[in-house]
Image 1 (cartoon, rainbow, N blue to C red):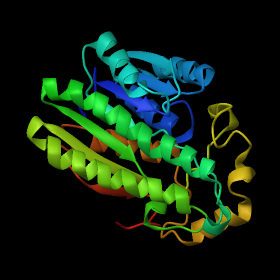
Image 2 (image 1 turned 180 degrees about the vertical axis):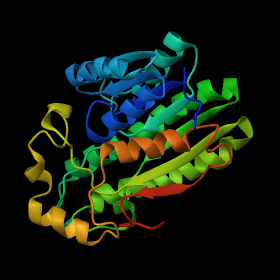
Image 3 (image 1 turned 45 degrees about the horizontal axis):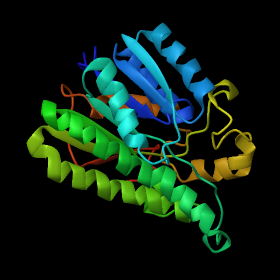
Image 4 (image 1 turned 30 degrees about the vertical axis):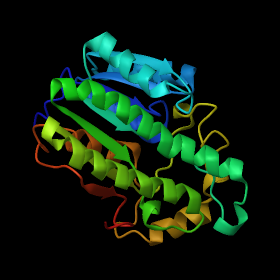
Length: 265
């Protein structure tokens, strides 16, 4: 099925590693034009080259700290100036430091998690909506998490991911009349398939075991109906579907869990 993404102008925040890289890859395979936004500039440039090899009509990379003042406007302007508009915004940028809730008492940790996971999505979405409203069309996809429902060792992170769901539904209600859809993809645990797809600022830069050791991964798998890890391509496939005006034109304000059944919203 042709999802209608050929030539679509797509922004993927946090697009240089793991889930974001997988999402960018899938849009490239659909023939889209993709802006890879990431704090890791060298890794973003690597992914940009990968996208062209995979079939993207065009690809660009923007190295930026999304917690900086005015970052959202810069992101939206980069795509609009290069391609004349924005068809899809994927708010994927995120950061996590797993730990038990009562141990995570550092306010700086709270602030960093909220700034990257929630505030950056607010900023980029507000800026992109200004462009999309002029065209009276567009799709915003928020990458949440199964931890939005409450998961051990993810209290602060899960709280920000729950906030994205509320934000997505507000955008859907307020901007549907402008032809703009807003939805959520909630991944389960996604471990990078290779070390080459991770930049120095990624949460995975310290190695997979620093985030989730084999015993913890095994515990996660036991909570899943399908008993298998979710991959970046799994998330990418869900995103290209839900952002498609062909396949999902009447889908808005929805949460789609892609984690083997670990979360059923």
